[in-house]
Amino acid sequence: MSILLGLSPFIVFFVLMRFVSPVAGLVGALVVSALLGVRMWVRGESIKVLEIGTLVLFGALTGYTLIAAPQWTVATVRLAVDAGLLAIVVVSLAIGRPFTLQYAREQVPEQFWALPVFIVTNRIISSVWGLAFAVLVAADAAAEYVPAIPVRVDVAASIAVLAFAFWFTRWYPARVRQRATGGAPAA
Image (cartoon, one colour):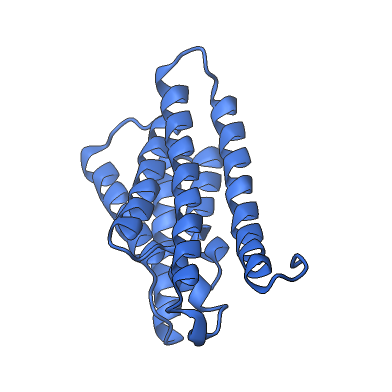
């Protein structure tokens, strides 16, 4: 499964949050997270750190919202979700299991999994995602707590940093392979 599919609950959250309501976004993301977990279980796939963390995050935020009934703004609910996503990445790095590692193992032959370059490459890619999510958190906080900064700046920063993280995730492993083989750059 690709990282994009693993991030699909966040995409559902963002779309529903913007066009319906923050609660609809949280519930929709929770449902998609649960469906991803069931899909992986039925297919006999390992459930990944990102999927577990996403299910816990959206479950906790949905439960909190239904019980405490906070008055979410677009920026505060995004801040809570993006902070949770950042926490998932930071924890995966702290426990020595970068969240990208499980996705990379689906695309790279097992003979390379124990190589230091494979592990380091995944730490770097996961760290770039962590930095991207830190930028999202900062942009969300700025949009909520700095009146001069409109939400559209938050959205533009989010799109730019996520586009960079996706690009880096594709570019960097090809660059590492190129350096390792001394060959021409991979497409």
